Image 1 (cartoon, rainbow, N blue to C red):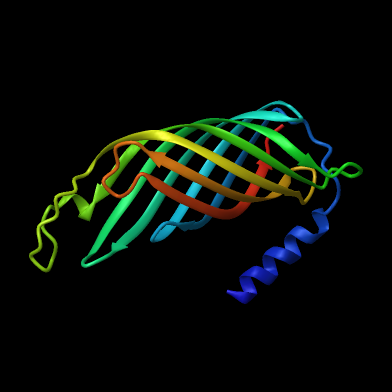
Image 2: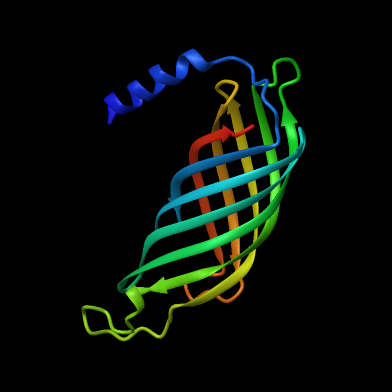
Amino acid sequence: MKKILYLTVMLIAPLLRSQEGNYSSSIGISGGYAEDGFGIMGTYNYHLNRDRYAQLSIFAAIAEDRGTYTIPYNIFTVQPGYFLKILEQRTFKRYALHFGAGGIIGYEVINKGNSVLETGAVIDARSQFIYGAFVGLEGELTLGNDFSLLVKANEYYHANSDVGHFYPYAGIGLRYFLF
């Protein structure tokens, strides 16, 4: 793992200069902590100007609720949102912080769709479509004309989830500016 991280840093280091690209579209991918497990998120951003963008995200989480029994679950959502820049380095514009919010719609799968655990216990939660809203923060560190390091933190509210109404995600990844 250390070798992969070292190689990644060595490949990205020559790209360290200020971002001069057009802010019309970007894609990103991040992975990290989701409640009780791991989450991954892919995003498409349509930059309206330097200070705001519309975002469409796809999120997937693989987790296990560990209470009296261990119950595996997965969450898959699509999230349209809107983000505003709230902080940016004044001189070289090397870093920025964005705040956003939006809606979510998706599906949660509890215990692979089975209502009986391996121990024989019956669970009353069921797999179902979910909906709700989210708020999020995105930190961005410019790595070059085309790439940025991305740090994301979202808090989801699932109005009808059997897993829980509030669901956090925090991840790190890369953003690529298309044009």
